[in-house]
Length: 374
Image 1 (cartoon, rainbow, N blue to C red):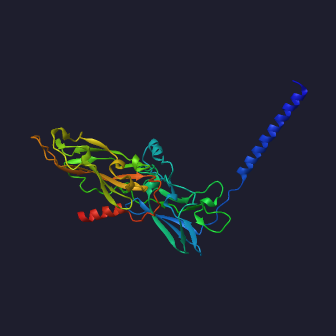
Image 2: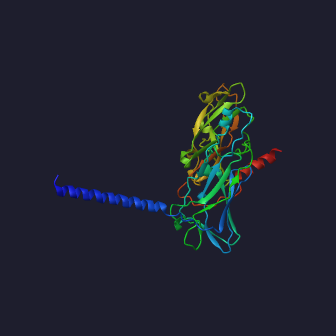
Image 3: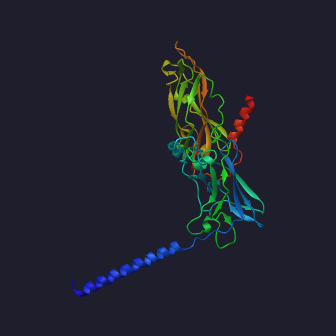
């Protein structure tokens, strides 16, 4: 290789090495920059656990001496969950004690609509000492299947908003005059009250779902981003040892629904009437019987499920068809399923944000039913 070419190649290698060193030094300089701490917030976050329900309450309170504007949106909540240390039996074998000492890993939950940008988030002005409170459902953050760490006795630390790598007023949750934005509020840790039999709370009792000759078996909970994705299997089973025969058509199954705000409605595509033909007779036993896949998005008006949140759904079966032949059914009547918790994670994209009441309408309905039973 000519001398000139070798000198040019060496110059290129030296230049590339210098560029790499410069880039590495700049990268190290960026990493070495001190973290900019946000100033103390005059507005504090607190969360209160409501007994016998998963509808809890969060509050933003102005502890300062002048009015403050805050971003208000329950979808900005997140929670960090730490399971309690497992109890160890000193009399157990070393191997059993090692297995018992394995606590579930900490978990973090936040809803599908979580956001940190507050440019378009609603605001409320809080006078000194004033609070803003709203309800939220813990299942909207953690889903209908809770992480293993979320049990009675767990420690929960709620946050409101989220901090980025660099401070940005686009993520501010408290609007104050200062050089550094307040991007996140952190509540004092709270401990989940109750024991393994009381947490998580069970769904409210479904009147008529027990004690009849026929029962409806359904899942305890379902979830989807929107109502179009909700579907589940409903099966008819006999509660006694003797099989039953009943007229059955899938359209004899209807849905009763309660919205996150307590509104109740019923959905059905049942025609005006049925003819009791023998082809419609089905045998129902403890181990087998008719079953159908039901979709609330097909049976109901989808506009009724526009809001993201937790709904209650139950199935109603009614078979009172007059027989047209000598073959008569041994069962005529109805059956009601237990309530299904149905979580819609996102809802309609055009749905307007509305604060959620602190009172759980499902817990109120369960309390009223218990009082009527006394």
